[in-house]
Length: 126
Image 1 (cartoon, rainbow, N blue to C red):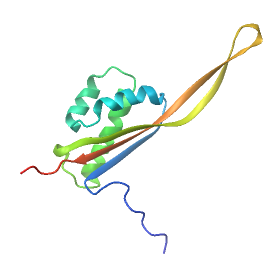
Image 2 (spheres, one colour):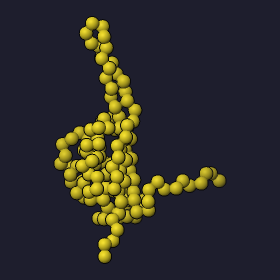
Image 3 (cartoon, helix red, strand yellow):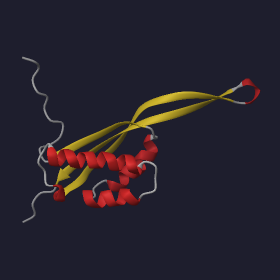
Image 4 (tube, rainbow, N blue to C red):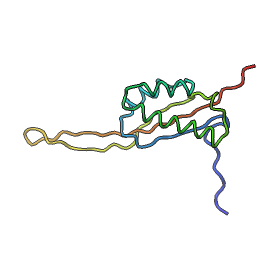
């Protein structure tokens, strides 16, 4: 029997990819995600290819996953896809300590992030 199938979280003309536990701060990741919001997927991939930031390969991998999901799982045309959403959120934070002078301690935070990319198919323009 089992439980009923859960409804889709995105519209029929959209595809989703989520990258979790990315070892970079959400602020730095959001700078790269903001660059590709609203772009066509081909142009976004080229932009990420030549971006020199540390987060660019992470965003590129998630975008390629969203494109593959759109093509294989939902049957969307990849030539008409664009990045509808690219949102960044906080994940866990590792707390580490470093010895400092006079017996004190310095706290080091190692944040993790998660990235959610939604690609959408453009409507036909007649």
